[in-house]
Image 1 (cartoon, rainbow, N blue to C red):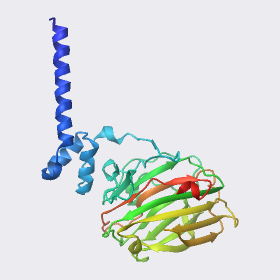
Image 2 (image 1 turned 180 degrees about the horizontal axis):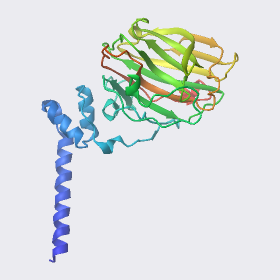
Image 3 (image 1 turned 120 degrees about the vertical axis):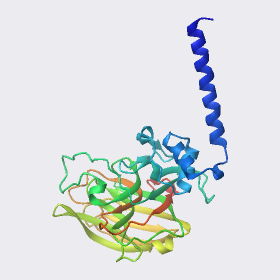
Image 4 (image 1 turned 30 degrees about the vertical axis):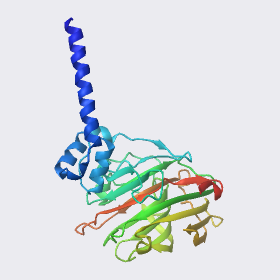
Length: 310
């Protein structure tokens, strides 16, 4: 046997051994493993089961660089999604529903006090000011973006959201649980301001204002307190307009909580409109701690009729 053949055989045996060891690690019961061991495996690019174990333990393990590559996934309703560029890899996971309600996998989002540091790309058509990173705004997030980046004039949407019983009400900043975004100001969002709103969740639209975004409409739809401990279905009917012919109708678990008539697109930003869901804790005051939080979403559905999003 020549040297080349011996080397090839040795490499093959080594790779098989590594595969078998990795399989044993993945299949193992991880309940007895230390947090340090779990994080070490996450950092080395571990299997998704190890990543889920880290999330369930609420560990803040740094993910390997190779896992930071953007992954685009297509849902059954042809809605592609990928994690936001300022979402840290360890703060988002596509997991089996731990409540057992849904057969399909669900999106788990979490935030800590650590912000994303990715520098935003310059936008040539931007009207207002743009800070370079989430850290510069003292914001933290764990979100996915959904494609396409424009919406039909009349459209239906549906998703489910689960807040654990201990989901916190922040003392500062502004929470956005879902938003249709223009890449500058949200056309609309479901939002709650830390402290002053005391957990109340609002439907909100915005306009460009002195280099920033300013609220134009805020209507209460529910509260964080009412969303805790269960799955809640959001069904949304939209007519996207930048004038008084716009429509936003919202049902929570089949009960209509919003019947809005008025602009649903931000003036001068109509050309782009895409959905983001997850946790975006924006613009927090420095010196006030951001409370760790996590929640789950099903993959949003979109269609021309209500029946299409059931």
